[in-house]
Structure formats: C-alpha cells, structure tokens
Image 1: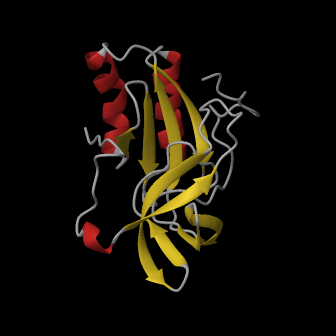
Image 2: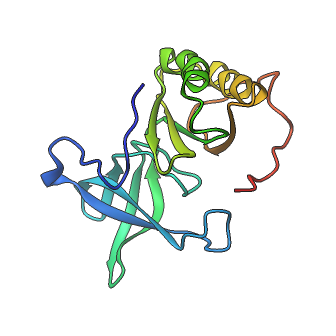
Length: 176
C-alpha cells in the first residue's frame, strides 16, 4: 500500500518543485481557507501538480495549472491542461481496523490506484489514466458498503462513456 503524508512528502528531485496554493471555501467540511500542493514548473506561470489534492475540487495529480505570484504565494487561477488522472477521497471509518482496510484497498491498488494520507481518517486517492474508472468506483463503493470507509469524488479526469451501474444519480456532500 502506498501512503504518504503531504507535509512530509518531498517529490523526487524536489529542488525543482514548488508549492502552489488553491483558495478554498473555509465554510466547507474541511474548514481550510487554502491548500498547498507540490508542483513542477513547466514554463511561465504554468505548473504541473505533483501530489494528490486533499481538499481542492476539480483538479488531480498531473494536471497543469496557471498560478500567479501574490503576497500569499502562488495562487492557482485555473487548470490549463488535464493530466488524465482522477481523484477520490476516502474517509476511513475506523483507523484501527487495518486488516479490513487492506482487504478493501487491495483491488484498488491492483488497478494502479495510490494513496496519500492527510490525517488518520482522510486519504486522497489517485486514479491513473490507464485504470478502469468504473472498476475503481465499484471498488470504492464496495469499501463503503462494507463500512470500511465513506468516499467522495473530487475530480474525474477519465473519459466517461456511460454511468457505472453502482453510481448513484447524486451523492450527498460529505458530512466531514
């Protein structure tokens, strides 16, 4: 299982990496006004995200964003290019139930998904472009049905052909 703590994680060759800042709605479930994410400069004011966002919606690992320098740091203005990844968030029901988590996570890991850990309960899931997004969603739904975790969709970068049969028409916002 691949897990990383965002604040401790330094991407390989981090001398070329910088932090970009997403402005968030502090009234949202996470209570954060901003989130900083590692990124690689790709030219001008463009930066490729180098870790999975925990709180920002609408972006994923490997997306390229436009960020402008301000007194508060490099603030993300928009996405300029998609990297093809998708992002989900897992809210672990019982952080002490490691074996149940491993059993539910194993099929997702086999599909190429990786994790980054924000807290004992909050994990960000990266779904690489080559993964079958419908199988990933099904695996996430199975973990939720088993009571191992709740999950939410933060961004889908995969091309969707038809809704997965397990996908609900709408998912209520996470009450975290």
